[in-house]
Image 1 (spheres, helix red, strand yellow):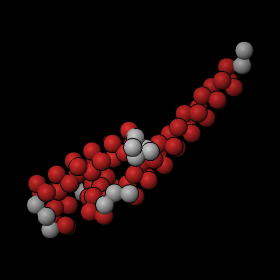
Image 2: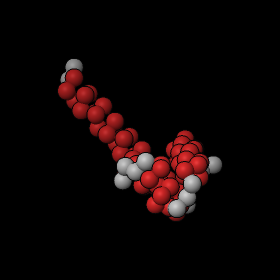
Image 3: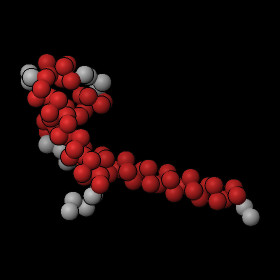
Length: 85
């Protein structure tokens, strides 16, 4: 029994799956409406807090929080059903 090759195969499958999920997420983010994509980018990639995003976008904090929550919901739904059905 060759445990090394089984481990390598498992890691290869996990790596491919992770890469596939990363691609799905990237596609889902790219398909977001511009405002949602901007909030997502500012929050997760630039590290801004919602209050800072509100200042940048000249929106209320409440509006930014709502947009952030709806964006997460949209992404979650898209990742749960990548085919879009």
